Image (tube, rainbow, N blue to C red):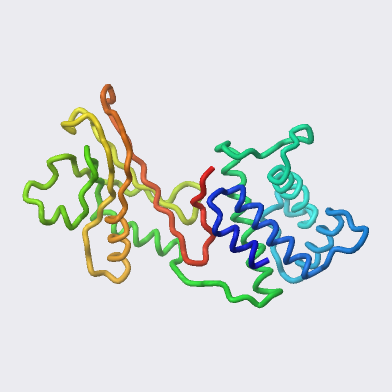
Length: 270
């Protein structure tokens, strides 16, 4: 179970990560309630999940209706609808989840995040594992971003954007780009750990017709929490190749996602 869990966290592809996480779940459930000779896959899974529920595992996130049995809800809403389509490619059997599809990527990612909660619970309750802990509460981190927002902006440049240190020593400031205000829009809809910033620019006023890089910057400070967040922004360079000819207005959206040390990763290739 631990091996599959680590493989999931180290995977670069969300489909591989999901498969390993489900295998971690299977390994933990098999330790909790071993599969017996003659058991079908669903019969064993149904019984093992029942044992896990009695240990306090929460399957409510997989069940659309609170009146439905959580084990049967998991088998219907997850095992049949997600697990099997990820593990198999037989389209004739029904819906298939395919690598490379953005819609399927999001489906598998959301299910992976929910699956990790089950695996972590079993690791703690069955194996007495001590998993890494610590970090910000989501609401608290959002409050810090709101505090930092007035000191933030967006650099757009025709070459690699300079760092904040380079800006401080340049007498001519930004000969190859523009510094623009960045607006804090607050929490992203439907997410508790993600916030959005936006920047609107009139392309004709920029003085150049191509953007090669962008950098969110924040004023350096000595605040115990705001300082490290500002440093993180200032080290992040986004390379691109945007041709602005014929474009009247460009809107840049920046997603800021909180990742505590114990949280599941979400940055996967499709």
